[in-house]
Length: 270
Image 1 (cartoon, rainbow, N blue to C red):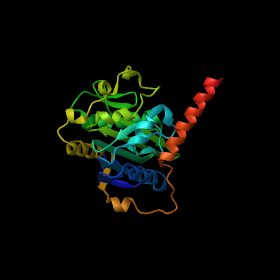
Image 2 (cartoon, one colour):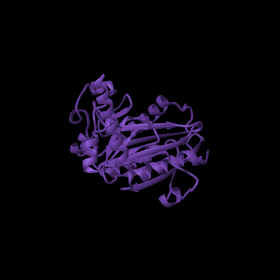
Image 3 (cartoon, helix red, strand yellow):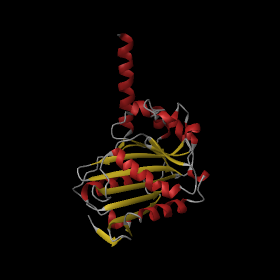
Image 4 (cartoon, rainbow, N blue to C red):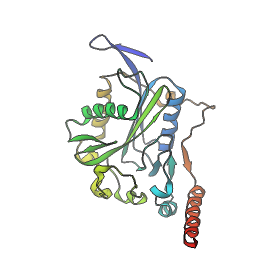
């Protein structure tokens, strides 16, 4: 663990490398995060303000046929990515702000590298960011204002490191939500609400994106010595690293449709 400056009680704060991007393709961001998780021992915070084009991002074990409206996605040529981490399915675009923490397991004193413990710590950190702007809650595995979700999370934990990444809805295009099915395993607090009633945008509560990102940096300084890092330095080429995050091809999606149709025919014949 890299050492930083001494804290107010003499404790040495670990170093957190901060990489900020604007409009980076989400596939490139996920490849960067996976490489930093698996190939470095440093602590990182990645902030990406918006992405294009609108893209569906699924968890590593999500079933496309249960989560995505495949025919409209193919028709409108919406990219679909299967990322390296767990969690649910989201559609992201220029209205999404991404924040990722990649840490060694001993970076935060007392934090056990388990999903619930990590969620608890990040929830407390974001509570500092949002305290002045709304009734912030960590509800199950989501970030919400009151009872409406504005941040979805995913995690991956390795032997010595973990990643927690969030897609925050600064704003969203409700039409894009039509590409997603309501998952069978929805959080209890959703109460079968549709996307319109379940989601909210951060711009309803905060004055600007910069206020949000500056708040994150301030909250991190309670735990880390934050050091800005140039993207080019962080994203140095590593020819030996092969990311598991993949862009699904149209042929992949068409094969899922064909497989589902074949399965249905067999059920009817039976």
